[in-house]
Structure formats: structure tokens, C-alpha cells
Image 1 (cartoon, one colour):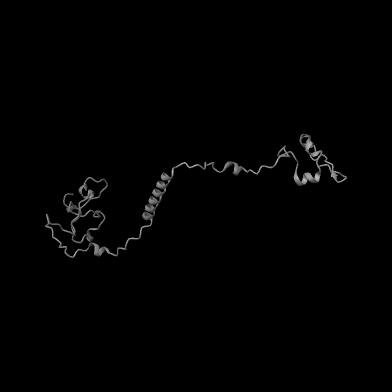
Image 2: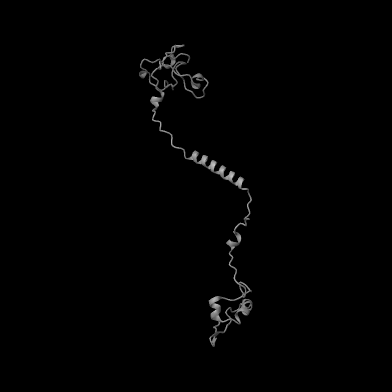
Length: 189
């Protein structure tokens, strides 16, 4: 709770604004004792930001100080001939790069795959068979067919030339065999 300030002759008398905080009261007493309250409230205490009131304000900001214009000498650093050669090379290479990136589009290719791969003069040649094959009944050679007897967990098969499938002979009733060999008559088993 602050004590009230009394006004005498238009000037505000400064009272104790911070009760029981005598350290801060003493710290600001030098600034508060001789200032007008209206002026203090309008423009703040003098001497808090700077102690030099009579010097002109510097018009510099942190950006202007940090990013100042580079100090380039006005004298010529490169000769006129070298400068002309550099300009000529720059124009030449920039023209080449521009032409590379802005080439005219190539004409569209409307050739179909049939037209590209079909040859009218092609004559097919029949190759001679080295050994006869039964296309629909013969089983292709694979890892499983060559290692038929070694594979772990394989059920009984009907023979080496038979197709690679499960043997359900143990569960098929004898009456449903339909002209097939019975399990005890299968070769090699």
C-alpha cells in the first residue's frame, strides 16, 4: 500500500511509493527528489539511459553499424583491356548457357512400337529338335524335381516322371480310385 502524494503549488511531492523496500527507495531518491511528477510521468527519469544530456543524439542503429556499406576504392583495379576481355567472355559463356537451357523442342516421334519392331522381310526359321518333348505332360526341371527324394517332409510321390504333387492315397477310399494304381502297386515304393 503506497502512501499518497500531496500536491503543493502544482508540483507533486514524492512520497514513499515502495513501503518496506528502503533499498529501492534510496536508489531512486536522487532521481525523484528534484523532478516534476508530470514531467517524470510524461518523459521518464533523466539519467537512466544516458548521463550525457547535452550531446546530440546519434542517428545510428545496430543494423547501420553492423551492415555498413563496403569501403571500395574508386580507383581502377583492373585494366580496360582485361575488363573488356572479361566482359566478352562473360557474354560468350552466358549465351552458350542460354542456348543449352533454351533449345528448341525436338520434333515429336510418332512411330509406334509395331512400326518400329515389325520387319516385313523377316523369315522365321524352324529349329531342329534335339530331343522330343511332351509339352503338356512333361514336368519342367527345377531344384524341387531334381532333389525330390532328399527334401524333408515330402509325402510319397507316384514316381520320378510323375508331376510334383501330394499323394492322397492313404485317405482316398478304394472304391474312388477310378482306374488308378492302388498305393501298394506303385513302383519303387
